[in-house]
Amino acid sequence: MSTAVTETPTTAPAAPAAGSPAATRGHVQITDVRKTYGATEVLKGVSLIVPPGGVAVIVGPSGSGKSTLLRTINHLEKVDGGYITIDGELVGYRLRGNKLHELREKDILKQRTDIGMVFQNFNLFPHLTALENVAEPPVVAQGRSKEEARKRALELLDRVGLKDRANAYPRQLSGGQQQRVAIARALALNPKILLFDEPTSALDPELVNEVLDVIRELATSGTTLIIVTHEMGFARDVADTVVFMDEGQIIEQGSPQEIFTNPREPRTRSFFSKVIEPAFNI
Image 1 (tube, one colour):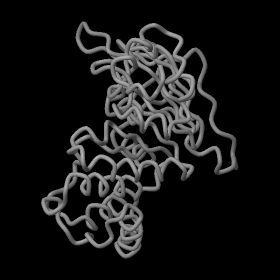
Image 2: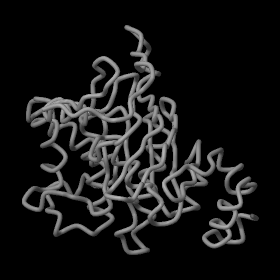
Image 3: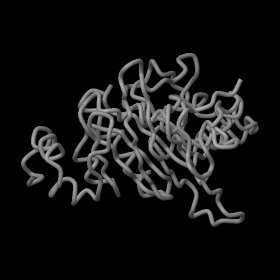
Image 4: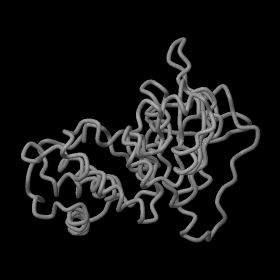
């Protein structure tokens, strides 16, 4: 049964023009998104646009709503108000009259093939090898042949520096290697956008850079990336836009130069003064 959302867009989001160039692939628009758990409003009218191929890095204190926002983008969390579109298509809902109604589960799952997500804790299948973890999703979700999926999986494992570990099981891999397999798995579906939810938070410090280096390479590939992280140096290096969130709201956003060296808002300045090394010259 479809579920109406109480707060709806005043106008239907525009669909992308037929035959629009590939350069428009991965345009994300988040409009007045709200999310409540019980009496706690976790997202308080968040709006954000990430253009095709853009790299948006979301930072802020724990509990500010960063991960919840990320999970609304692929409809792992239902919104209680507002809406999200990717390339003009509503995520998780259809517009009927002036109300949003939730899509059927199979249609939501189909949409998710366009939205890759890399979680904190890898989420690999322990009974499958690295190669099988990467090759399985395109076969199951997109109906690709096993031969095609296997070939693509080997290419992606090579891209993340793990082709020689293709036949290893997750338990035989370090945390950094498991996370790189998870990135390859997300890429296997050729998504329009990639979401990263604190991808290095579960790693030992010496393994962090091997994962960040893979994401740095992806940031130059033309795929739209939205990244939640506590790695401020990494955010400065890869972001087109840095988004600072606190208490369920976007307090400030701008280029890394603007946000890290000359934040306008007192809450932003206070946060960065506690978490950023003096070399950032705030």
